[in-house]
Amino acid sequence: MVDKHPKNWNEIKTNDSWALFKIMSEFVYGYERLSEIGPCVSIFGSARTKPGEKYYELAVKVAHKIVDQGYGIITGGGPGIMEAGNKGANLGGGTSVGLNIDLPFEQHDNPYIDANKSLDFDYFFVRKVMFVKYSQGFVVMPGGFGTLDELFEAITLIQTRKIDKFPIILVGTEFWGGLLDWIKNTLAERLRTVSIEDLDLIELVDTEDEVVEILDRFYNQYDLSPNF
Image: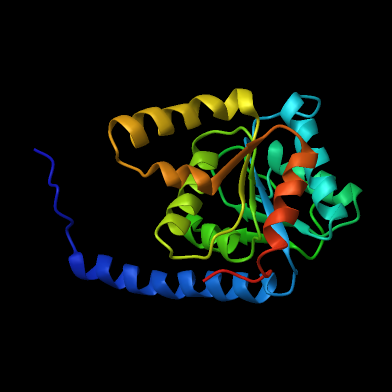
């Protein structure tokens, strides 16, 4: 039989205590670096999307259009949609930030991040705080589990009023339409596990012009400011 109980609880507790210092150092590092970047919009999406593919090229256009409006772009710093977002910011001459994470596969920083705005994190939860705190909006392109995680965390924080509302914009009706139908028909109407009004937290679009229109409309009513 496998012993499910650790041999030395005191050693484990000590290691956990020391880990707090590393976690705190990542928060301090992120806050100090990102407090200087100015208003930015985060772009999320799959790391597996290749240059030349529909949503890669659309992400480039979306990012370029956003920086034309005076915002910078924050991404997860890696390949795919993240690279496309930083590329669009770079082409538009705007601020291009990458919040990299150490992963056993697929993550490496892309070449379109500003030289002094590439940050490295070990902890996903610290990195996600940085996205939420320093973003004026989330633009969510097609992606996988990581993209869904970041999307639903933002929705949950706004829904529970832990942070102020900001625009959450899904790009790609053919990709996101089925998910939104399931939330509306199954969660809201049949099971009533969410409120139908919660769907108002999300916008669904297909073009870069629609993304910018939503950002402009929102910030004609509200001030630009960090969350938390």
